[in-house]
Amino acid sequence: MTHLEDALSDGFKYHSNLDDFIVRSGISQSSLALLRAAAEQKSAQSGRFSKAPKRYVVRELLASLSEQGPDGDRLVANLITNLVGLPLKDASPKALAAVEALRAKLNSDRSSKQAERAHQKDQREEAERAAHREKERVRVAKQTARDSLRDRFQGLMAEGNAQTRGYLLETFLSDLFEHEGLQPRGSFKLKGEQIDGSFVWRAGTSFLEAKWVKDPVAGADFGAFNYKIEGKSADTRGLFVSVNGYSPEAIQGMNGKGALKFVCIDGAHIMRALLTDGGLPAILERVWRHADETGEAYLPVSAF
Image (cartoon, rainbow, N blue to C red; front, top):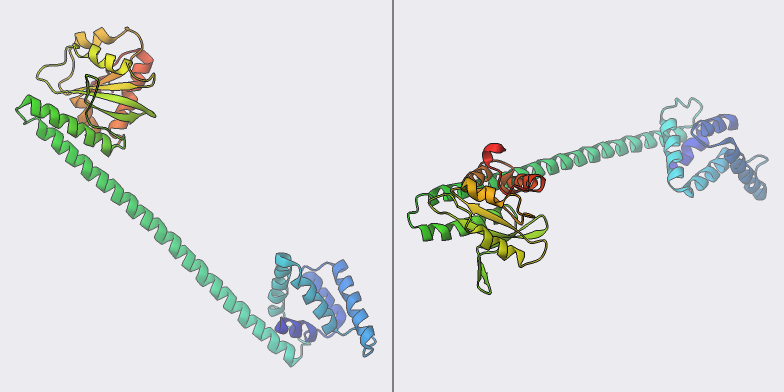
């Protein structure tokens, strides 16, 4: 504050010039009157001056602003900015030197703020680039994993042993569910019931029944699967997977027989899940919505 005090105290020839400058910088006339009254009181107590010198007024001003927090800081900044922009023809050498010091400090602060803003901008841009790189890394990793699952599924078609192919299908589906974030559980038994697996869908548990037989499923297994689901909680649902599809009679036999507890998909659904960005969740959402709206457990990919 020393430079500011010197510049204000010795930069103006008359008190009126100083007062005009202070008011133009944002200090009210009423506040200035109080500051002058305080300065006059101190001057009278000193007994040295008939009228308070400008420096007395400036000290009262700066002391008052220092107690006003952010508002005071803003007014101090106004005083400095306005001072360095004035010619100050009547200023003393000391005041001119003080103004030059204020100008240098102001320029230094501006440069520092510009550098800080540039640094913050660089940091934001780097953070955005890092986020983009991470997003791309995750996308590539997910796509690579999906491609690997697709190759595995296609490779299963070459497996000649039906029992081995069925087991491999269960492990493949478990890995697919894991890839899609569906929290799978492998096959398990419950008091004589064999469950091919389960996963989480729509905040509830869905049982899995997986079949890879030569011919389309005729529907004989639907009743047993429905029984497994019915014996659990009201929210338990199911997903029947038959890679080679279903006979028309099987699907028609399910329609119109009460509330659906499970839906059906086939190998075409799985391939679509492995080839599209939406993956399996988008397909399940589509199939379940169709079931909710129509009561039909099966929506072929050709109808998507």
